[in-house]
Length: 267
Length: 267
Image (cartoon, rainbow over all chains, first blue to last red; front, top):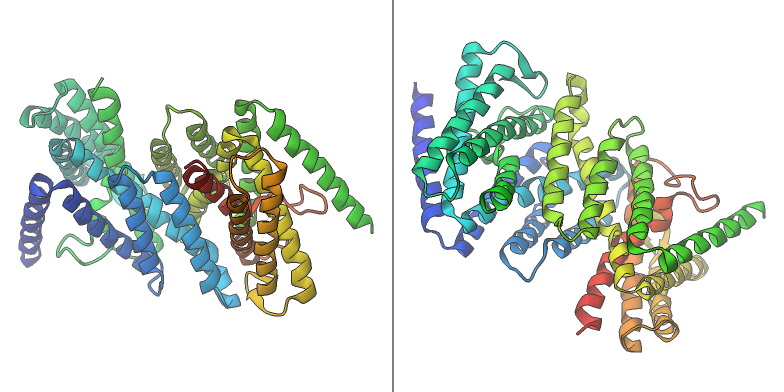
């Protein structure tokens, strides 16, 4: 019982902070806020995989370079990528001075690229969504929230067929179907609620796609956790686990919603 | 003796193929040629790290998506990156159906990102260089060839201080200095030889930077080889090892020369 009230309190505080940040923060401050939140998820991921890592400063710095490329029109993503590659390479070259460290080099190099390209790049699409229209971001939060809840409740009520036995034993095919249907429904509701320049069919379909993608994005984060034998990605959010646990669905959903809007809603 | 003649013969054939490709292949065919060569280096890297990999098709396909983003102006790098992330995630989700595979997931995921971002992305700058001016590419080949040879000969003649004891025991600080000086000199010669729109000071400095970067790029590939306990990356080029052994310097040099030209020579 105490756990549930803690969970609800954390949820209320999170909602207030997130809504305030999306609604009122000027773009540059929002970008900084987002950068800090993503860096928190990166911290969690690296802590899980390699608790003794000494390269957090390098990762946060390169994450900042990638983030700046989303914010500052004069820096393209491509030179930012080149910079992160070379700086990481040089770091590896000078930090691996003992033979025993060789055995973890390939995994370590991949972990850096994972931080840059699996977290900073896709999650910074949240900035692009908010910049185009804050309601696009509220729309995304709504459909993911509804989809994930539907998957959880209906999955545990009716679920019989495991969808990802290794990654997420609790996720069922029935839950995935429920996520698609209810996120689609939430998409229609979102289209009615928010002043979005798209038909209800378009917002409903976008919601359904997000519901499906969320059910794919989330278990991939679970693969990282299970590979490292962790239940939660962190403990920052009492009752909710870590930041990464809350953001995992956005890794795939944020960029795809951005392109869906770019290609379909705008045409 | 037989080994040296094999080495020279291979070198002559390589030079003919490369010069012909750069000089005469139309852009689209050159892009295809480059894609195949990079895919060969990717094959070597993945074979080294994970000989039993079943995801070559996925990697080559995503490599093609990234390559197309360099060639076709309608596909930006960013959506190509998002696509490779999601397809790789889904592949992982459905290929890891047994608990024992979990332990290699983090490394495996990182290996895919390494193929995309450490090989396809930087090496496709070779296409951008050739597209702007084939002579930029000849210039790059010249300074890298001269710099690497200088590092090898002068390093083994005068070298006393190891530069990277673990990554490349044979590389010495004296060799690195020689690479910078001779590549700089080759840069001046390149500026005289080729019709390049830059002063000899500019081409000399560019050569020196390439000489230094090549001596950083090359030992990072060696880290991969040594981590996997391999001497050569492959056996495709008799007497020269694998494709990756020949291309390792270009991983850092090609993108940096491209931006040097963009920013300094053009202004």
